[in-house]
Amino acid sequence: MNAATAPQPLPIDVISIQSQVVYGHVGNNAAVPTLQAMGLRVAAVPTVLLSNTPHYPSVHGGAIASDWFAGYLRDLIARGAVARARAVLVGFLADPGQAALVADWLDQATRANPGLRVHVDPVIGDFDHGVYTDPRLTQAWRTQLLPRAYGLTPNHFELERLTGDTLATLDEAQDAAARLLDGGTEWVVVTSAAPQGWPAGQMQVALVTRTQRRVFSHPHVPCAAKGVGDMFAARLAGHLLAGKPIEAAVDQACQHVVAILRDTAQRGWEELALPTTAP
Image: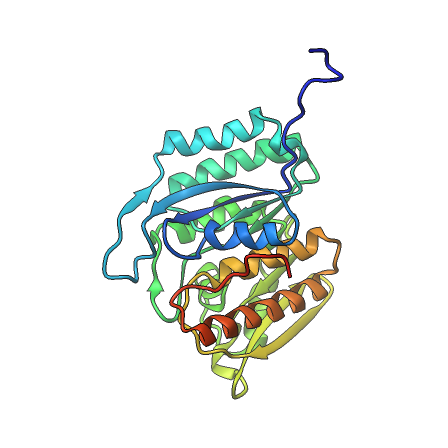
């Protein structure tokens, strides 16, 4: 077989590095179908493999062994997937060791593909459950991964942990997000922003860039299903890869999340009712 007819690497659009579960729609189980429904090819790298999220009465599994995890990342470069990828999503990590491995790999990946956009969702916890990841990860996010991010999608709780500040108002949250615009980071989208000041029946998402600040309000849908932030981050990435401006991408991602939560609540399901076909 000559070079002209040799098989070419599978064209991967997005490399998604986050958790995986057997049952449920969190981490890659939320991000992969969301991105695929938008017509994107995805390579999913698991950081942990669990039977389900830990809020259920039983959970089995754990972190991916570090040598396996490092090998997954190296082989994406070896297979030629990184050279053609357009974005990397980084979400739930098991421990600071994984953060260090991802940081080193990102340096290799962006050298091989300078156009690669790194979207970091610094999963730490939320106001409902507090910190539910390794507490050491907060510092690892700060030092290892935020400096390598093109865009960030923390929730308000995570923004407070990353900046070390208590942020009572929307202005304070936006000021804190602006302090994360360092190096190559172009935008920060804060989900569930400033919850103490939400209008009745509404939630807010704050977008902060070097040139603008915008707040998006959307209905608050009572729904306890997990993985909403993972779905939002994936949808946001998909819209940006489709060429939408960041403002439109945030707005449309919010609308998608509201629609999915309403559908999930109507069905009475305990996990997100992700669509099985493209919208």
